[in-house]
Image (cartoon, rainbow, N blue to C red; front, side, top):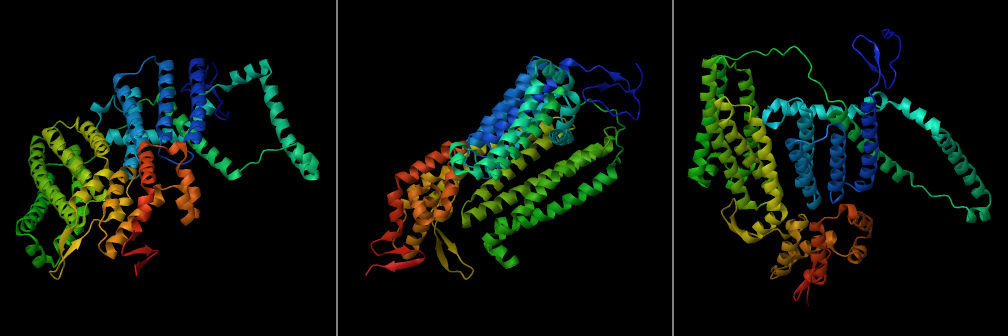
Length: 564
């Protein structure tokens, strides 16, 4: 077979050997590639129909289920079976997509999307065995490489799938032999002619226009549907090609030479950081045992402001310590017993001190919640610190005992378990119940005076749908002895009615929001939490509307009108 001319352009559907010789295309591989393209187009159309109104609701789990069903069918066609680990990751992707559809949105829904994408990436790893056979064999850098590989496939591999893998020459010959090509050409020629001449004739004669009706096309909406469908079809095609049609093979590359760390470098670096952490911990012991008097005398700040100013910095300290220890572990030769021993010793010391830093961060958050109440952001920050503490303990049990291989698996699994625990907690409802159970607090001001800090009902009313039943009951029971209490109850009731009340109430006060309300009630965005919130508010709508009125007066807009 003659070699390929270097000036000759590659032919679609033809496979070339390393020496440039053209090899016959594999019919089975080409048929599988065409099936992937067909499924990708179907997934694009489905995404356009299910996700056009935005993420959230039952549209997301339905589309993910269609994607997984397509993947399973393609794997059965190509290989014949789904292994245990790919099956587990498929179930995980469907689980978190379903939880995303059941929740009311917000940051938890974003975490569900991240978890779903992570499970899909691990599906590809488990099926192809690249870059490692599975999660238990993966290191942290393998997980990062898998994510980058999946992104590259999803964004670029649709082009070779269409232009190279699918052998369209045989399809074209089949269409020509059956007359299909002529039919396609006839439709493409006739349709624009009918539309152009029909539009002109309709404009020329009103009677003809009354007989012939051409469809009215909303160009902006059509473009939005095409854009969503095209993006999801492109991504699906590239990802499925990387998993099914042409998984990458390992590349024989020269290993990257990195500097090796010895006992002196490790001792200096980890020793200095440990000394810094130890000094910080000693300072923390002063406020933990000395109380607010020590804090105020040292910094001039109250307890609440002191707790407020350092939490997220301590989160970053805990987060950056992980890559520090993992990096030093990777740069320390396994054959250098002295350096390895010093790393294990100083690593354990550093983790003990870091545990005290994490305890300080959680203590600051506890103080902050005590003075200002619990919020969604504070709950998520606390959950993140709990996960960091779990990861640090797992690092001590694996990396610092020269068993680094299971560390990445434990980190991933613990993250998914914490996310599942957050779903079981139902964050919005938990925050509402916690703040209502706590009730008003007597708070000391900077001058030493004591004042009462009431529960912020308006903030609770702005939480997600799962909190609405709890908040509606609290608003209807709220005290109304003072104008300030009436105002707070009134604001919370207005927030609930604007978000979940009837269309008639909203149209009478905020007609500009009716269209947005109608889009929010689209069936693709339905979930049980929202349905329950709407039912609760509409059942108590009359009582909520009376929340601004008492026997002593009422709020009209921003003014208190006392009863004469």
